[in-house]
Length: 181
Image (cartoon, rainbow, N blue to C red; front, side, top):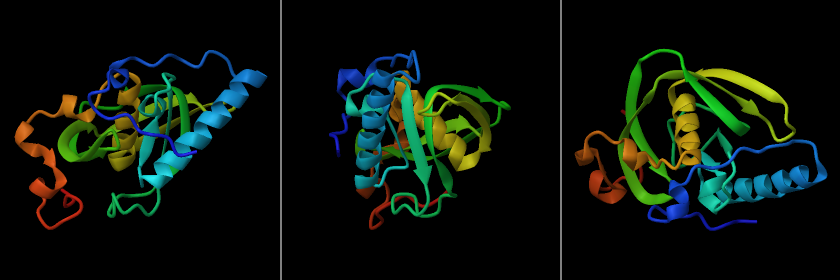
């Protein structure tokens, strides 16, 4: 089911989400299955690169992400479809990369956001199997953006230069999306 995405200003987006405590119980399995179905439907409907459970009003540490061909990110490298529960991010260096970001909770706007260039993320899939990946570039950016939602952080809070934050049509006249930089 397509759910409404909470928008910046809703206090629920500023709260820290709670961990999924158990896997494999009938209740947890049913809860995660229904949640993930709604998150996937909502993300696909809005052409998102990812979605965090708090964005649809569910305060659990669950994110999904994945990019193949996406009109909102036409030049982005592919990111595998991923369910990440109770994530832990570990930067692999101090190298920071800045780029444009948008968010389904901040519709019609973009900002120039600093993120770690490379990191390792670990967590669980929807079945409670632990996994980890080492990633960089756009994949690392997407993971950081979505996991920020779990800690009540929206990307505008990370912007260093507010002259590089605004509405898409004002920042990039005549373009639907910002140019890759």
